[in-house]
Image (cartoon, rainbow, N blue to C red):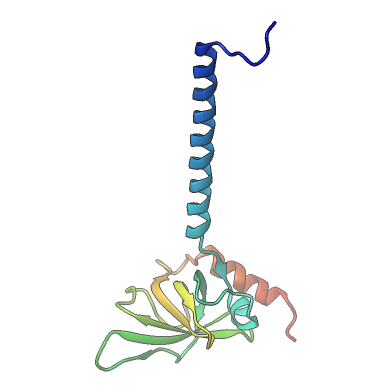
Length: 152
């Protein structure tokens, strides 16, 4: 048996297998990188206030809209409101656009946007609950956890 000499059909087969492995490995790698960049995690008001949430990165945040906290601009669509977890954590959200019809004080919201260095959330999208029995699961979890923990 000779070593070092490969028949042409086996060499082609080996190159084809190596090519397929490289292409499939790179496509899986690129897909995983794209998925990791598009993940936007949910952060509660307590996590945002404590500094756990990343700054200048696309995230989702939510809670309950604080009573008497909605301020609308007189000459454009800018809206500012405060979101709370019904305990001691609250943060401000700035949004420029038309809010959902069901958006109001005392209701649960989830906003998608980024947190700036000053701790203000700049929302690109604001979602409100759709009826009186529904609350976004993330917001319900935050409120249930806040009520389960004893106040400091």
